[in-house]
Length: 447
Image (cartoon, rainbow, N blue to C red; front, side, top):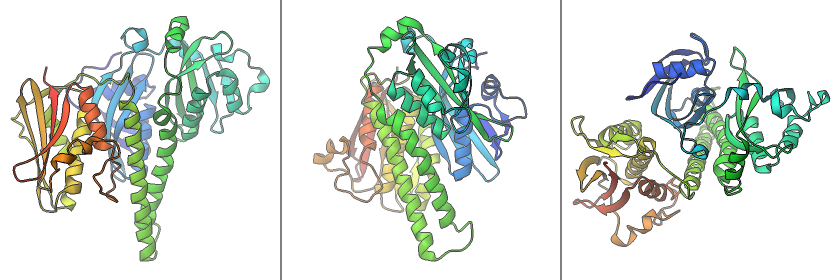
């Protein structure tokens, strides 16, 4: 059952207990494929986890998630807007991922994986094993430490660490390559957290899919130990940072009762520092991704004015705090580009966020779009101090902040943004506008 082609965002609402109140058709079908029932819990693990985190933190979250089942593998860009009782979910980008190991066809999770799995309890003790992965296991292994069982199944220590870290955090796992000792075959592993009707964690399931000798030969050419941070460290860091933020905000907001004023200020400082670290984790993950030799972006048809208005909406509250007005193109202005929606949104968010950070209070930021010389062009102009000629190349270097310290930035945003622009066949540059403020120009192919 394939989901329909998406020409607009997909929306849904989930209550504080994880129940899917309603959803547009595409998400409803995806939820059914994940085992969800009408009137029941949101059953897609990656989406449900993001919604739970947003509700717990009472923070708007947006990020890419990958969802895979036996029919297809999807990459979704999801935005979650929480309130105390309900989370509004918007899927603004939805694309099917190609399986590069099989000549560009859609990847799949064969039905055989359903009967080829390991199931663990919340303490990672082995409860059951089916199919190929049960070979070599004795009845006395059940109830024992699952870490030792997994170590006996996996030859690749890096893959073992990925799986164990993800399981300990209750994360989903996709496409960790596992090599069985018994015959050298290569497997993909699909992991998910198991929950009961009250959405309480009760264990984990790992399903294994064999791809045979052809996949093994190709995989042997892949670099070993790649994506160390994004796959291994970033997931381990995000959850404790999220807990620090949530607990610090609870203390600083005096939700559990009044405390001394200086303690409340300390708590807010802790929350802000944890947010900075969380943003740095995201930046380092992006840095690792864009510097991979095989990094590629999708070729979506996007309308730059629509992207600009979304960015302005996402940063409206931050701009209002500084009495800054963001001007965007009108609905009638249509400039189409061929670029990945999520990555273009990421670039513009970084540019406008920087403009807010470095512009004087009470000024204007302008986002304009046009078509020029076979390129779709979007410019972000502010009324700040501008960028000197000698600094215009330096500003795109890694960890470069032009001497600014304590501004909350990592010095990676513009470097990553330029790499993303070039990966999409475009360019990102900077000059100064007529009134002296900085003017960043993003060019993207329009055909």
